[in-house]
Length: 147
Image (cartoon, rainbow, N blue to C red; front, side):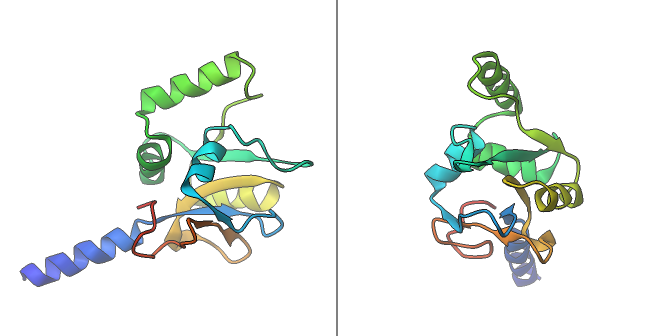
């Protein structure tokens, strides 16, 4: 019985990986973790000179948001909110990330919005979207940073 629990925990950890998704026309396939962090912090606002990055972030309470706050932002919920209020107030960003309420909403908006980037449960990535590699790794890889 103990072995079954260990096996289940391992499978659950793999299932919990978070994928970074974009439209296939976004001219990026791989980001370093540092580049990913700058992207989600709003420090990189364009993919290319004419394609603006649109951040899509899950609403509070979502498992995916918790993983991203912990691993990418390295902030609490309150710190995240204050960060974006200050960034917009200082005119360093036109607006904060757009809030999405489900993985389905995230993938629909990514598919329909040029330059949009979102994070979703790796098991729920539909055909037609591109999963970005992080440090050369895709979700499910042993050293993948978002789980």
